[in-house]
Image (cartoon, rainbow, N blue to C red; front, side, top):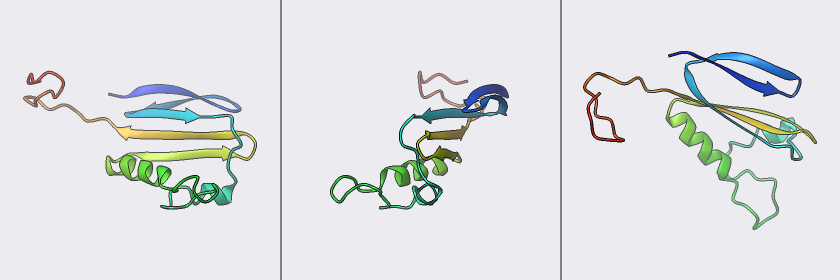
Length: 106
């Protein structure tokens, strides 16, 4: 199944064709420089003070998403906030497959 998803960019909106599930998380915080953005998925990388974080959050998230065949796109500008666009492939049901939600076959 293909869906058209509209998500909003800072300049406007754009329609995108997706056959995957899409999750967009964004904030209006301090944003990230390109140097920081290039390192956020490296385990133990952090911009926080010692004792304030392990630097594992984004690395773990990246590992989980990619292990399911997904992808994470990061958009960020200093003083403009950040946006994480997470895509995960949809599993196509197979005739006779057991539905984990109710135990019935499909």
